[in-house]
Amino acid sequence: MALRNIITKEDPSLYKTSRVVEKFDARLHTLLDDMKETLLASGGVGLAAPQVGVLKRVCLVMETNVEEGQEEYVIELINPEIIEAEGEQEGPEGCLSFPEEYGIVRRPAKVTVKAQDRNGKFFEVTGEGLTARCFCHETDHLDGIVFTELAERMLDPSELRAPEEKEETEKA
Ligand code: NI
Image 1 (tube, rainbow, N blue to C red):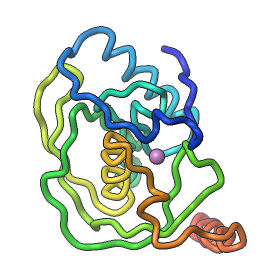
Image 2 (cartoon, protein in one colour; image 1 turned 135 degrees about the horizontal axis):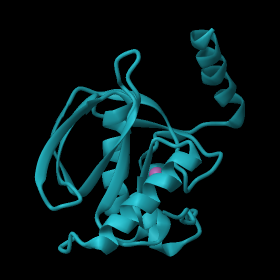
Image 3 (cartoon, protein in one colour; image 1 turned 90 degrees about the vertical axis):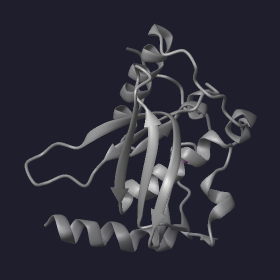
Image 4 (cartoon, rainbow, N blue to C red; image 1 turned 30 degrees about the vertical axis):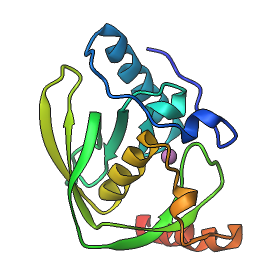
């Protein structure tokens, strides 16, 4: 496994449409393994292949809504498609390709995604809250859409302190 370089907003690859994956081969598995290592090292909750300069419909989403005592885990999604969405949530969103930038984005509260696994097998997965937001954010990347285009407004750095402090409080 190897860390891949995450491209940032200046790179035109970020705004291109990714190609459907047809070969579920060792090359794809290496990409997935490298992306997973890169995601875990970044501290983010999701990563799409175009963010590492590979225009393929591949992304990773961290399932963070786990029971106490269970570990968060990474879901591999190949050729993902959102097939159901319900409810609404509005909140701050960021992206590994836009360091230090956050904006308020409206997303569904719960989404179901149909995708293929690394061997080409179809499956469905449902996520809520942050996971639902992440499914939307990552599948958007595969169509060259970035969150800054969808944000109702971008946050001022001074507004970011509040959620962090809140999180600190919750941890304590
Ligand atoms: Ni992103």
